[in-house]
Image 1 (cartoon, rainbow, N blue to C red):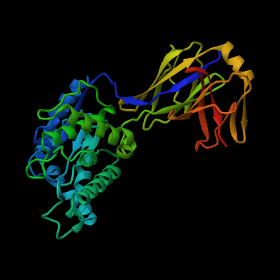
Image 2 (cartoon, rainbow, N blue to C red; image 1 turned 90 degrees about the vertical axis):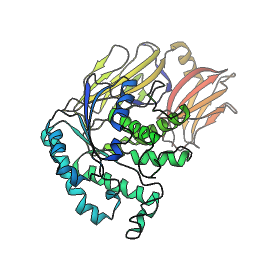
Image 3 (cartoon, rainbow, N blue to C red; image 1 turned 135 degrees about the horizontal axis):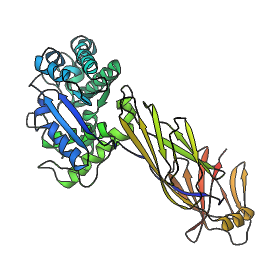
Image 4 (cartoon, helix red, strand yellow; image 1 turned 135 degrees about the vertical axis):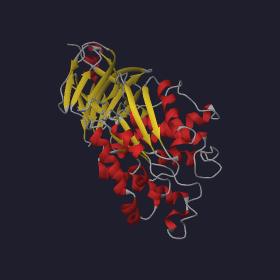
Length: 417
């Protein structure tokens, strides 16, 4: 068996790759129908290679109470066979005082949520977290000063929609939080219509991008559909903000629902890679280690030993009882060089207090690269006096790579006391 050395840790990305057509129902009001959010979302899905059918019912000004008493809305829910049902409340109502929202909003959100699940046992309810008005809610400012500003109104919307998701075991699409991020990043991107409330085309595009990332757990490629009036730089900024808010914090928005979330890390010791499954809301796991080896183990950890050097895409696919699938991909670059490693073993020693790499040969390596165990490069350092002290790193375990003239000679883990 050849000795195996890990060279580099790369980032984790997630993707939902289930080969099916997803049926999605949008129930809302003018924040949904202005600029046709459902079909903008569909266009993005199509450009990314994902197939969806969208249906929308969104009368102007509707509250959750209005929707819960509307025969057409109830008939749409009762059709069944929805994969996702999006619920959007009236734009101001969830930002009102908590006691008022608890009385006038939450019971009707629960009624709709419960009805969706009664007729669609595998549907995921996704609450459409909207955005604060550009300068706050002037019409209700006097009675509730919290919402006199955009930031105050946005915070209340966030709180209420998260509460609705938690109370009903559902998910959130954080459109309002991505909206806030884009406002703070580039205030020249006008997300509002002239009324300072409804979305512009750019605002609708932002909402559609947020729903895509929320439902499919994927970022965007260069082929992503761009709505009319949005230039490449604006589209890229919106997509990047969406990825950062949604995908980097997916559990913030979906921890109460049932959408599976695939996630894993690994460690390397004694030529064995041990993979730890941190996935959420799944009942089955399927591993592909990139070397023709697979596993269906649902245990917390699985292991694999690679016999050849090369790049290996390790793919974890997790599935819930309703057949919804999410995947996580981690690429590892593995190399073996028995003779060189054995030579270096005799010329390198490790002392642990403080953690120090000591070079005993007369012509030592010239550089050390230090990574966190998660794969973040902490720095590249020159060898001084045939040793390198690692105690300054605030990491319990580091991965170090020894280089000479830019060529990696040796790689291993080291516990830092």
